[in-house]
Image (cartoon, rainbow, N blue to C red; front, side, top):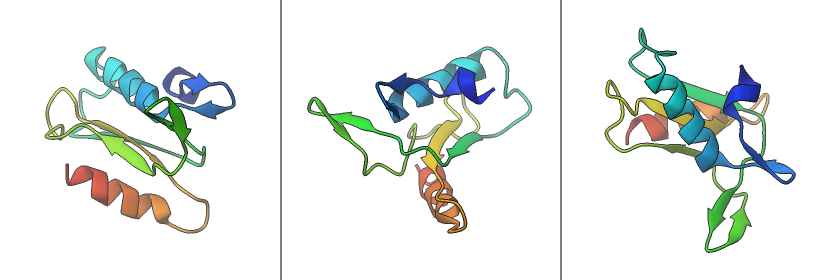
Length: 94
């Protein structure tokens, strides 16, 4: 399923496009029984910032998305660090 979610641009996956893919899956009913669906990956995601690939982004989510149609988020998790737990908690706050 991760191949359906992650959207790669060149060598690194695009976090915003991956978030859009998660939202598309949500609209298709993939997460009907969930209040939120969050995709954690060890991939080093990038985000387009003024035409430059910025790899400092840790996660993204839609504002006010929990329990709604945009109830999805995406984040990085560095193995053995539990960094993804912090990212998930932060993104849920949106």
